[in-house]
Image (cartoon, rainbow, N blue to C red; front, side):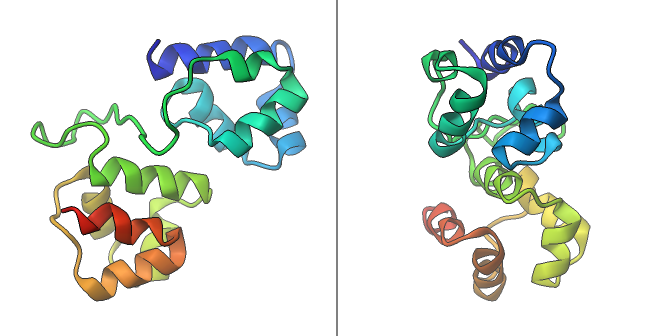
Length: 149
């Protein structure tokens, strides 16, 4: 089952309840829940547990892939940039923090377009000082993601 089917399964479990209603109950943004339901990102195990408390244990029975591998459906992504590449993982971290690209760019003091290019895989490994700032905003996983690049 690909992430879209998993998202559809989650949406089916939500039933007639609104995304906003569920999002408030599990303390995430409506946009994040929408991203889960569309298959753009995968909820972390912690969020799955919260979803199960609200939507029922069937949430845990969905065949979720590892949550650290975000899938990109961006048609503008470079063809040589495989799914699960650093930019996809970076995007997943950003979405988990419920931040926009503009917010991250502002916090790390770079142009929004520059940050977007890093996420899409058009920019190579960021400079060490930028990586440090990104890790402060998004978490230490940023350093791990780019350590292998």
